[in-house]
Each structure stands twice: as C-alpha cells, then as structure tokens.
Image (cartoon, rainbow, N blue to C red; front, side, top):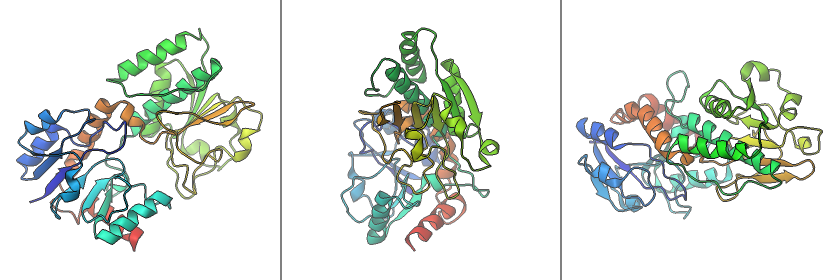
Length: 349
C-alpha cells in the first residue's frame, strides 16, 4: 500500500498545498494510505482533510514517518543538515548547480532517500505535468506593477502579502494605479505563450498595461535585445537552462533605457544560466524590490514563491493537475515517477 504523507510547510508565507481534501478522498478510495499534517498556515483547514478519513499528524512530524512513507510538500525543507531517508516529492531546485541544491542532494545521499522533483515531473514528450506557472506569472506581474507604482511615487515597493482571492489582489492594485491618474507603463513579456507568461499577460491586460508578447520566435536570434530596455517593465517568464540567451546584461544598469522594473518571475538568480545579469539574489515578501541602480532607477523583483500570494487559486489549480499522477504512485518506477527518479539518480551519481 502506498503511504503518502502530506507535510506542513516550514517556510514563512507558504499557505499553499499540493493536495486538496477532495484529492485525499480519491486517493483513499483507490487504496492509498494518506497522512496529512496539521499546519498553522495552510490555506485549507485540517478539519476538511480529517473529514475524508485520512490520518492526521502533528505539524513537522514527517521526520518520524515510517521509512516507506512518501513525503509530499512544496517548498524547501528546514535547513538543518540532517540526512534524508524518505522519498520526498517537492520542488528541490537542485539540478542546475545551485549551492543550496547541492547541499540538499548531499543530505539525500547521506540518508539513502530520494528526491522526486515536481519541476522534473514530465510526460513522455518532456512537458511538465503540473505547475504553478499561471499564478506565478499573474502574481509576479502584479508585484512588478506595484514596484513601478512605488517608483512613480518616489519610493520603493514595500511588503507584499497573500490575498483571499485574485479579485482582492486586482482591486487593491487598481486602487494604487488610480492615484496616478491615466499614467500606465509598458511591459515586455518573454515566454508569453507559456503558463507563466499567460498569467503575466492576463494581469497586465486587466490593469490596462500595454504589453509586448515575445516567445521563442522573437528570441531565437540570441540577442542582444534592445527592445527590453525600451519598455518600462520587463517580465522574464523563461526558466534558466543551457542555451538561454542573456536578456538583460550587466551593462543595462548604466545604459540609456526606459526600463525601470525587472520582474524575474522565473527567479533563478544563482544559476549560471540566468538570463538577467544585474542581480544575484532573490527578493522577499518583506522587501520585494532590490534596487540595483539609482540613476536612472532600476529595481528587480524576484520572489521565488509568488503563487503563495494567491494560495487558494494556485493550490486548487496545481492539485487538480497533479492528482492523476499521484494516483500512479503504486508504480513508482514507471511513467512520470520513473523519469523523476532518473533525474535524481543522475544528479547524485
């Protein structure tokens, strides 16, 4: 019997979850054993999970779970250096040479566990089967626009927060734009045809932002891309990988430009393949904008858990995409899970 253990998230502001109570009920009906940890911050209440008949465990008790339990979470584990003996389903951010990722892989190697990375959960054609991309793009565009509004008011963006719904986010953002009258920025989205880019474009459209949409055809020549500097906001929606061109070189800081806000929604600044060379670290909910140049002003926003700003919509969407594949965990060496395990084995080999 497959035992899936849904852990609580240790990261601040992380209210998302990858499995809904409805999904738990379907797994139990299919013969799975499901344990769900209590959580002080999860958007969905534990009572809704308990009503399915699943087992309920204390927060952060996964470390004592049976050896055969598959631990399912989203974001990073506590950075305590302990060996990891379980199989973990999560976003590991460990296969592109990231320093923290190498530490994580070392913990798996030491404990004999394995990482089944959600980012590398793909179908036979290599396409990801479940992603938070749309809501990352949506929220990332909203934060970028918030940064631009703060600049127009002579400041820098302050703390961001989670919203009960996307409509609440839109209403607050629209109110901040009203203070500027009819003034609106221009935006360029790279990766506009993907999930992330579609979400970013939808937010821009809702806010009346004139948007240029680029995808593979427009970037195939490899750069340079002076058009990026000719827009007020640049939204990067393409994951860093070998061969990704540089969209914003380090020289952009001092170049003649209209560009004043970079929203690196893909957010992988410590990768060697990062296409944005004017910054080197993620930003936070408390300080969403990193000012990388003063005259002319240039802010970068790069929050790595953007969908958490809309935890209800993003959790429901992701869980619906992932559930059919969770139901195949009884064949862990086949299909999406076999491919994910192969990625891990290559990384630690």
